[in-house]
Length: 375
Length: 75
Image (cartoon, rainbow over all chains, first blue to last red; front, side, top):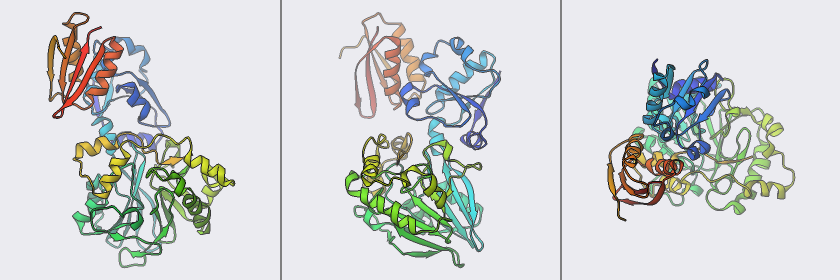
């Protein structure tokens, strides 16, 4: 039978539409346990490729013949080998093109809404890593928020809709992924905005983003209103766009809240986090659509693959917004935290411009899930 | 460390370093040591896990000028 190559885009569509898929992950067990392709109706079997070198006869009874089968490995080489062995046994199977490396880098643009005047709002879902970035488009101009390092995707997307990128923002100094913000600004001549309190050690020029800053995109009145909301980092800033969308960065997620410890100052920043979530955000309209910089679990995706929810709904349902006792809150966000993201210190230094690792090294630093939240 | 055999797997991508290692180990006697040179960064985790599952011992490993070196004693 035959072996097909399945792209990350095709797998993403299956995640969004909740299709069934049987994934044979042939990476070693610890890599699989740490991070895998998540889908609500995906089933998994993890057998390292090096245990299959003598043949796949021993696992044939574990592989369904009535389901689509996808073989996955780190970079694709081993998955092709195993897929071919399965094909020799009579199965029709696919392998993931580019492996988990490509999965980690795939971005899927999803439209999350229209602006009041002419304009659209897009969310770029980095499905394999749970990072969310944004593009606001109005009247031929575009702003990008929390860009990943896969900068060509934004440049090509802006080009395809005839928009010129004029402003680039990071809500905070990221610790889980390498920002593409500076790179995009250099390529397009756009202004790169960073919260100055997060940028005290950066080695490049930037435009300081401060509470109350208003930025216009296009020549119609599309306001991007910056709101200082420390807690995940000391500089963390949220944006209210067009009085309709709230970009919450790593402060508030759909089913969790930000963790304050990735710069090593958890105890100091707990009160900031609480003030941002329990006071500053409380004063905002409950009708705002919250658009975070991450999702943690696949259940946070909406039907169309986007990640968003009204602020009022989050105040009713998100556990992290409903802890009355301040000590209990402090405990939640400083104790029993999940492991820190892979290479988070090196990632922070890269985003400050202190080190300049090559692409291969950047890829390696970003491997794995994002882990910026506490539940 | 004294090796009974040296395998050059430099420049090879996964799964070839392990495929070659397995073949080379098959040609050794129990207790003999295979030295492997590889450049694929995934080789470290995979060789470690492979050696363990196959009953071999990863005696030592080091990095020298971007080349990963492993010494595996056949079980």
